Amino acid sequence: MQQFDVVVVGGGPAGGQCARSLSKAGRKVLLVERHQNFDINSFSSAGTPLETLSQYHLPESIVGSYWHKFIVVTSSKTGNWEAQKPLGAVLDFGKLRTFLASEVSQNGGDVWMGCRYVSHEQHNGQALVTLKRAEETIQVGATVLVDATGPFRSVIYDKGTPKPEFLTGTGIEYLIEVEDADYQRYADALTFFLGYKWMPKGYSWIFPMEPNRLKVGAGIINADHQFVKQTEPLKHYIHLILDEYMKIPHYKLVEVHGSTLKYSRGLQDIYYQDNAIAIGDAVSTVNFLGGEGIRHAMQASEIASRHIQNYLDGRISSFRDYQIEMHKVFLRTWNLSEKFGMKKYLQDCDAIVDKVVTYLQPMSLEDVVDILFYYRFEKVSKGLPQYIARKLDSFLTRSLSRLKSIYKKPLLR
Ligand SMILES: Cc1cc2nc3c(=O)[nH]c(=O)nc-3n(C[C@H](O)[C@H](O)[C@H](O)COP(=O)(O)OP(=O)(O)OC[C@H]3O[C@@H](n4cnc5c(N)ncnc54)[C@H](O)[C@@H]3O)c2cc1C
Image (cartoon, rainbow, N blue to C red; front, side, top):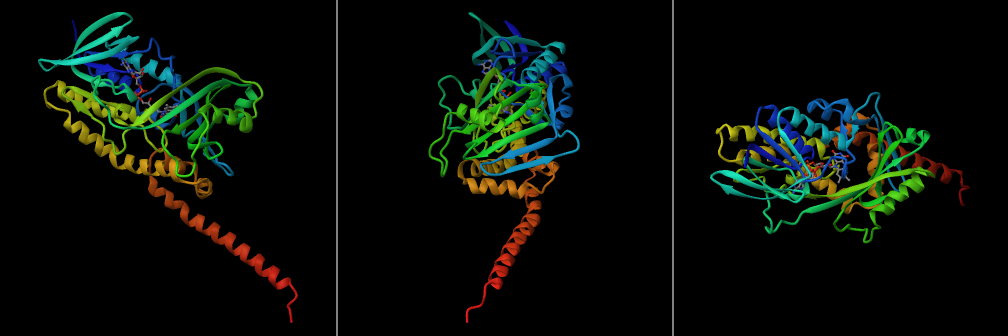
């Protein structure tokens, strides 16, 4: 039986980054991924701020495109923001995961594709892990076992153990090929659609994937809305964008992919059990407000990797401090994001969604990115003076014209 310091289950951004870091640090690592390759179910739109590339030393080759514009379309408003230089990228999710796994191999780690985690049991402080590759059952030993299976949380919840209720969100995306002129209309921009018309209970989007290829998707929170009682299937909203907004007569559908995210409200997830530790979406690192999860999954991996090294070196005997650190980093901001997300997606009526766009419009794109990607919610109040000034201005204009019209009327005697 092969023995590893660490077995990482799941080759998403969390598992790939964790295995990459630990193999780089000289640990004997095995990364297992159930799919045969990373082109299968390349479900993520993979929009991210530029910082992700530098922070995690990601190469240009995994970038599909860069964006320096941000557009929000609601039922009756459109907000446009633009910066002078790129503020973010749209990654090729398949290439990102392939790159992380290839780094693991280059660092001397093992990567087993098409290999599924089945179960594990404890034996003398080691995890005895059962895997399945095609029809073959394989057992390996691990000092630390990492659950990076995202929404499945397959390792940390044993088979048959009831899972708590999660808040779930489902997204479907079309990867389409379009004429160059059509691509250029959406290049350099993240375009989002909100509100009853485009996507009640969530949002839809157009992201530029790479020259002549666009990602058009829709995501919904699977919970009740205060006002909207019925919604259409997700594909209806994608076709609405294609037909009514983009008005593209000819496009080639390259791929349809999607996934369901499972988020624990108040971050009540199980972070560790014995020598097993959970990272990424398995501990709800996806942000509920924006749905951004890649950067945060990688951040969780870096935190976990440090604790795993301490465990392997005998400096700690439990991952209790990992959970504490994760809560320190995420809990407050994630609770706030959850609150704003619940309000925006499940409580606000259409008129309020429109108002938010009007309110944010005078801000710079840098400020909007700070709010939506860096959760600097205190910046929201920055728009308040301009908003009040605009409201006051339109009130005065209306009052003045009313006065003028009264004044013009002949006085009754
Ligand atoms: C439609 C959609 C659009 C999104 N868009 C964005 C975006 O624009 N920007 C962004 O930052 N985030 C986005 N996200 C969120 C982001 O993709 C996730 O938060 C991120 O992928 C989480 O990474 P992870 O590694 O924790 O989990 P995952 O990416 O889910 O990876 C888990 C891996 O584990 C594997 N696995 C599961 N079970 C087993 C098993 N038993 N054995 C072996 N392997 C197993 C899976 O095959 C998978 O590869 C989007 C999500 C969706 C659904």
